[in-house]
Every structure is written in structure tokens, then in C-alpha cells.
Length: 135
Image 1 (tube, rainbow, N blue to C red):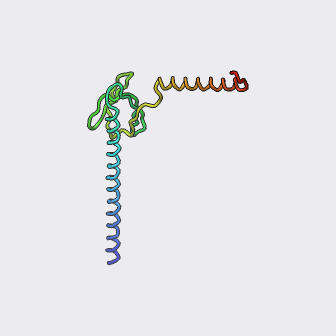
Image 2: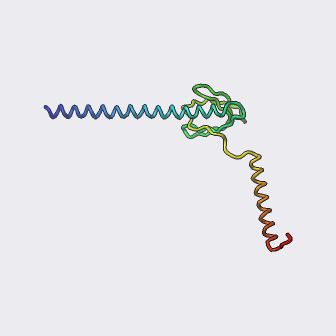
Image 3: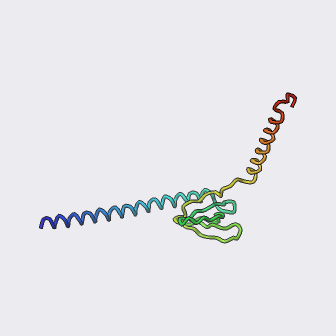
């Protein structure tokens, strides 16, 4: 009888510990989700709203969206496509990343091109005038 009682107590204890760890795991995951949502919310607030607030948004299902933030509220924000004008309301919970669109600006690209051109001319001048003291 004592063996059965001990076995029953052990089973109850194991079930209790297992359920407790599952509950703790869910609470921890919810906390991480809240922190990620707060990070996304802060990034949206940093970018502002309007046509100049262009962003690339990555959702939890790995979908990438491009556009600008047309509106932001406490639970969600609205992403508008600059070309088509379509809007999509996204919950902060559904978004993993908000960032500025990649790529260099047009003046930066021109500056890099000019710098490369000047560098090539300097190398060509150095090679051509290598042995000529009057060059």
C-alpha cells in the first residue's frame, strides 16, 4: 500500500512540475513578444508618419513589405504603398522588424562614382609619369 501511495505522489508531483514549467515557458514567451512589439513600436515612432517615413517591414511569416508609415496608433500602424496607394494596417505583434529601406541615396552614388573616377585618373597619371621627371 505504501508503494502505491508513493508512486501516486510521485506521478502527481511530476505532472505538477511539468505543467508549471509549461506555464512559465508561455509567460516568458509572452514577455519576449511584448518586448519585441515595444521595440517595433519605438522604431515606428522614431520614423514618424508621412510620405518621407519610408520603411521596409518584415512580418513574423517572413513577408517583406515596403512603403511609408501613414498612421500610427497604440496597437497598430498603417503602411501605405507609395506607388499604388494601398494601405495595410499592421499590428505591432505581427511585425518582427522595421527598418529604413536599404541602398544609397542618389548623391552618395554620384560621390562614389566621382571618387572612383578621380582614383583611376590618379593611378593612370602615376603610371604614365612614372619615369618622367617633368610630368
